[in-house]
Amino acid sequence: MIRVKKRKTEIKFNSKLYCKECIADAVKAFSDTCECSVKDEGNYSVVSINTDMDANHVRNEFCNYVLGLMKNSAKV
Image: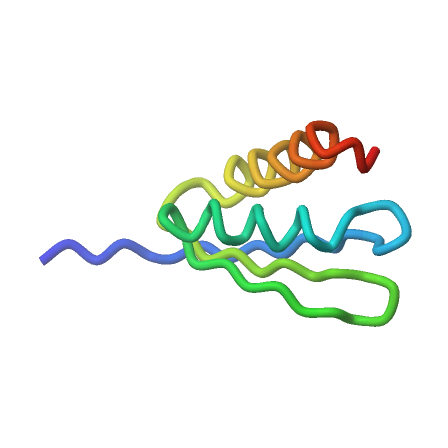
């Protein structure tokens, strides 16, 4: 049996700058690829990601996805 160590990363999105709906949609979209959850902490939406892949790469792709959703929904 091969055991793959999960890698964890966390992203803090300032609620004044980022659309909470877009963040939630990104969490849903990435759920097939990794374990994601979001919680509110003051003025931030904090996304936790557990993945078998390179955590930095997944974090960057997640951020790009959120920005793309915001741009496409005219929330930028």
